[in-house]
Image 1 (cartoon, one colour):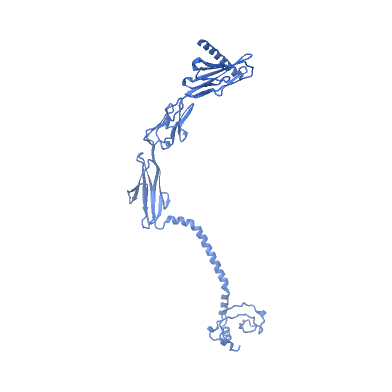
Image 2 (cartoon, one colour):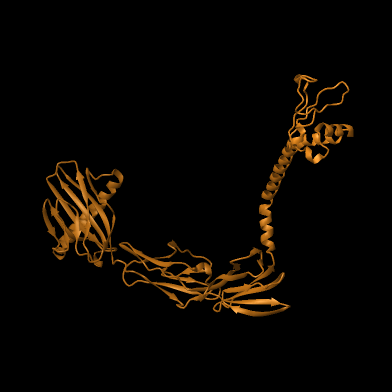
Length: 462
């Protein structure tokens, strides 16, 4: 029986290969077409695997035969099970492992084992006016899923920049056909002058380490049925100091010079990029001598009460692991009035001061012009009075009826009337306008002054 089954399987296999040649040349096999979604299917050990198959034909059929064969590399195909119409005939060796529900040609494998890995061949025969045959082959792989990887670092204590080397190893307990990939900050790590990988890519070697190698490293492991990524690991790399700077909370900084006011307390702080953190020392230079005045990142300087003083300081940063150090030199100038601040303030306010001065000058000038125009007529009157002849002045006194000028204060109307002799007359308020010249001859301006009229003025005859 075994020999007959073998011969039947062998003849079926030959027919399958012949039909595949026809399919390549014509696209169909005598009107019958068999198709599968994928020619490679990945399965997980211990789980069920379903191999879907579809077929179709356009001729009348009295019988439909479906046969499944299994082959490993370099071995002859082995019969698994077959059916005619709805009757299934399994190989007794595999009757509990493989399942088929005709006329559906799909195959169920449950459970899947490593020994089930290989090529599965399905052949469909249609009996009608003649016999039509078509087949397909599906490659099945079996794997264990990947367990979560763990990354180990050597040396675990860390490495010194430009001196030490570092090795990252990815460890995985379970999984088959593993593929390793190293990620730094979620991006693949590539080979460079300082990085290299082992043959299986499960080890990353960095020699020598630098500050740029610091980052979030992880190991991604994949296989045909799963993938897992390790936790993030940050290698310990000792470096620095880099970028040493000195800053302050007050004062004016220009380059390496700080200008502060007298009596003002200023706080300096020194910083640099380094791991582990630096130790800081502050050094003062005075009269060609240097001495350490303080340890730590901060230094407070209180300016002395002098007109001006210049002092040089040095901030020294030291990394006790890398053995490297750096220094920052700066000068503190103490001024009595804050020359730097005043200069800066003067520059910013000079346009405003100029505009304000010009505006004040214009306002004062306009006021003076207004006052000059307002009081100019009184000056003219005064000049005319001072230029009159003494006889006229005495006539005016006699006309007033008073010998003492102090008694002549009061309100007067000075009116200039034209005269034939050209000498103006100054009549008093009591002279009627009709006694000489009519009102139309008046051509001068009338002014008023404070008046005090003595009682005896009315007793004298005019």
